[in-house]
Image 1 (tube, rainbow, N blue to C red):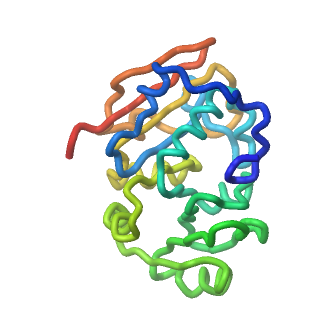
Image 2 (cartoon, helix red, strand yellow):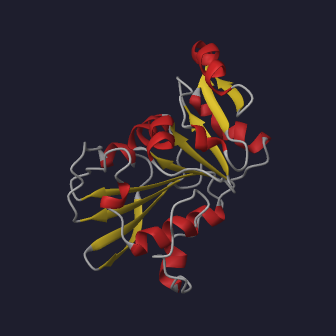
Amino acid sequence: MSANGAKTAHISASPLEPEFTRLYDIKDARFILNLIVDRTGGYAPPGASKELTNPRDRQLFHHLRAQCGAIIIGAETARTEPYRNHTKQIVVLTQTGILPDDFYSGIKPWVLTDESSLLRVTKEVRGRAEIFTYVDLRELLDFFITKGISSTLCEGGAVVASLLSSHDLFDLVFLTRTNTNALGPTIEIDTLTQGVPSLSEITEEGTTYQRHERRLR
């Protein structure tokens, strides 16, 4: 089983090849995005990420997790993907606090919300999660540092990824570009990676794995 409770028997136990290790080394990045899309920027509907992914993508997914101190997701991702039995600090960005009951197993999750949503969110998660408020999402960079977390990985969904990108948060963006049709909405890749240019990529069996990296701030 993986840290989030998903079955991982299909993931190769073989060490990651050096070229992929170099491509997916987060180095000193503070905020990292990992996202899988089709060639047009289409992404899987909530709960359907398995329709796009493949064994290599899942291997890289776990390689990134191993390097990061926290994982940030949106509430829809928390509701539709198998996040449970946390062994990493999971952080949910939400205005509702509506999360599944089994989401609270493992390390106590953190919930981030704006001040106007605090009462509603508190009613939903009181006692089951630590609650923090923000005024400006750009505060998140310093927030995680004060909590002793030097690197945070965003695992989506795409709405949260776009929101964080619009606040200029990502130092690194890893995109898996697959030929499989996502059958879902699309995301503007150029907008998502603005200021975080593509530096290198590997293509394997028709799927491209891209590293977009911001120059030193």
